[in-house]
Amino acid sequence: MSVVVWRKTATDRARMRDSGATEVAPSYHPCMAAQRRNDGPRPERIKSADAEDDIRRFAQLVKASEQKARAERDAERQRLVEERRVADEAQAEARRFDDATSAKERAARTLKERRARGASAGSIAEAEGAYKTALAALVTIEQGEAPDWAPAAPSTEATEATAAGADGATADA
Image (cartoon, rainbow, N blue to C red; front, side):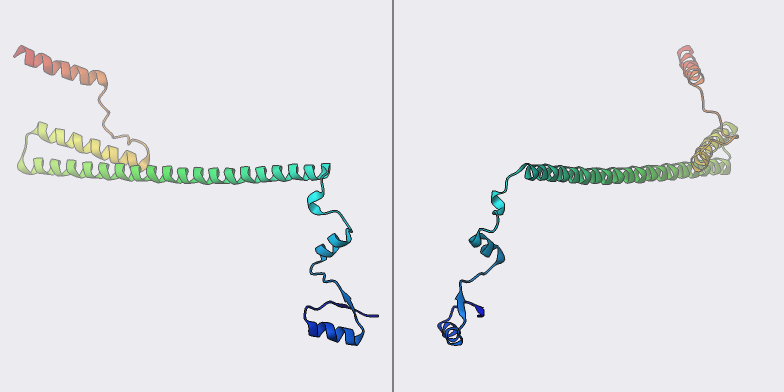
């Protein structure tokens, strides 16, 4: 005897009857057939310590993956901040170099002008000192250390003495 799945149309049922086949109730999905036969427990009714352990492990995995993602985002953010800091430092260094170059060029122009018009020796010496100072600042930026020939920076005591001497000179006059 052969088993044939029940058909919905009357024509199909008539053909099955004529062929001697037996009608069977439809089984659309294997899970539905198992539920009708009560072969096993339904998944929503399973409750055990194993399920609770599985849920706990799943929660731990989710938490760990969230922490990993957060750590990756923080690392990326730190990398971007570091890149920005390096770029800002490079830009500031370039700006300092440009400023030192323009200061040296201004000092050289001033020195040439004073020599060309025949200014006093004191004025030329002052322009030469400004030029040497500007050139030393430029070399320091380029090489990272001050050259041996660089003029010494005036100490605070010498600056105060000069200022006191100028004040005393005006007070006497």
